[in-house]
Length: 375
Image (cartoon, rainbow, N blue to C red; front, side, top):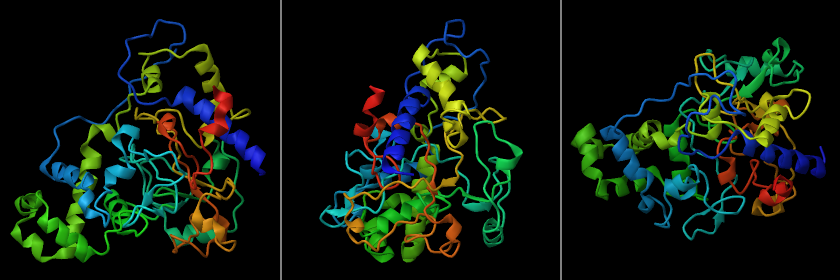
């Protein structure tokens, strides 16, 4: 795939994403009888809304605490801004971190929204959200000998049998839980640069919210540094699960599905193209239909694709001609490196809230300037 082809793919994807996966909005009035309304409205099942638990309240404190970084200026919320759908607030391909906030992150910052239904990493046939995980090594070996069928918006038996990587957090799926996902940027020297578990634990002991650890876990929690940090990251995970702004499901498209909003003629054409297997076929990877039990669409099938995005010259690491970011195969992930049929594969991101982003693909090589045809 050449650069021009990928450029056009990115431009078309952004145009259609704008039509069917709009930024989360306030609820719109009932429009089921108006032109452009969904002729077959459904009832969507959203996560329950309740006051934050004591654990989640502690996690909120930690999520916004910049003092845990070596610079004293970078918190979880700095890269995952609530004003940008918990994605990056900057215009560059990656965020800057480290002690002096001058070190580039390795990849574009993904959004933290809509992760409450994200499956664990696995390799095997395409699954629904409630299917069991298949043995990783066994299925990876089988995948070496299996041709991959084309995926379409209307899934077929052939594509459902694909032996593919799926699930997991980060672009390469190397974390399965929100707790594990939280600790990695905290210690990464290119990000928050916390230094070590001991250093982070010492800081946690001195924070104004330290008394909450004692209330939740007992005073003995401060005697075990590793456990203290683990519980802190678990609290961050609870905050992400319980705080409704991480998974509001209040886009115009959600309300259209329910018959409470209508799409313009242009948006309807975009939706048709988005779902048409013979045209854009975007929904082949960015699923736009609710689940069988009424859960809103996530606009991702959680699977991995090798799209051949060009190297981003703006990333310092790419100055080394021998450096390659191979996604599932490394360099940040190492346990699947020998399965070379998956090299160059990266997680398919959700298309929700794409209007808030300024960099696209794993290395941020594309920006909104590439999608000027959408205007």
